[in-house]
Image (cartoon, helix red, strand yellow):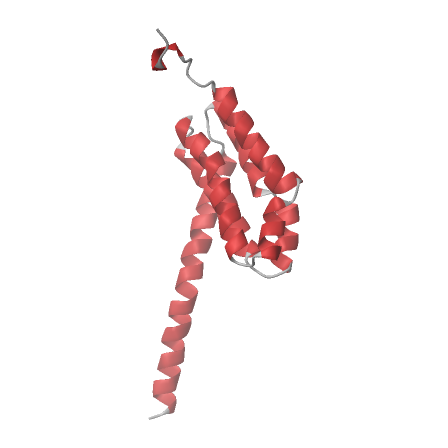
Length: 152
């Protein structure tokens, strides 16, 4: 009798090998910057969506959340800077977010612990996000304040 019970569960190495293959195609064969160059904006979103596979493997392997957050920061930087026409595509060639994430996956899968650097990077990225969101609000407040004062 053949069925679902006969199949062996996939090995952890299979997921990690697939993540490495994805990183090789996206970063070493420059598919990520080419997508951004050929389809500006949309190509960067597609590249980031594909990069979520590596993050998904990390979640499936129950890596610490700060490691997953660090992987998301790598993809976020790749998507944000990569969205800038031409310069972002050059950045994609050097940044290699998927390679970085596969390296984190390998290191943390074996060790199962976070480093102080993980916490600093995630905390720094969170601080930059807050500053990036606050800057336009503060600027608009002072501009409005100046305009109201000027028109009196």
